[in-house]
Image (cartoon, rainbow, N blue to C red; front, side, top):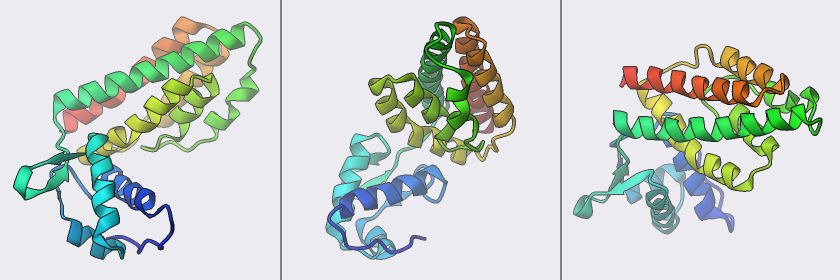
Length: 203
C-alpha cells in the first residue's frame, strides 16, 4: 500500500504525513483498524515512529481509540461532515471577504490572485489554502491546514468527484476581483455548501 519511508530525523513526521495522505485519498477509509505492526511493515519502518505518528493523528481527530482493540481511522457521519464544511466555508469566506476589501482599497490587484487561479481543481487544498494564505491571517491558515485532511477524507469516503469545482473557484475569484466583500464572502460560502451537500447526499 505504501512506498517505504527513508530513515531520516523527521521520520515520525513523514510517517504521519503518509498516513494522513492515505486517509485523505481513501486508501485508509473511516473505520479502518490502525495496527502498528501492519503499518510499520507497509511503510518499512519500526513500530516506534508509527506509534508516535498515531498519537499525533489521535490528537488531530483523525484516529480514535478503541481501548484494547487499538486505534481506527475516525468514523464519518453526516453531522460531522456538516461541522467540517461549515468551518471550511467560514475560513474561505473570511479569506474572500478580506481579499475583496483589499482589492477595493487598492492594496491588492487581480494579478495577486493568479497563484490561486492556477491551482488545479480537485479535492486538494491548493486553491483554498492559496486564498487563505494570500489573505494573510496566520491563524486562519493554520486552522485550514489542520482542517483539510478532514475535508479530503470526507470527499474520498463519499466518492464524490470535484464536479463544478473549477467553476466555483472562478466565481469566488471573480467576486474577489470585483472588490465587493459581501459578494465574495457569499460566493465562498456557497461553494463550500455545495460541496457539503454533495458529500452528505453520497453518505
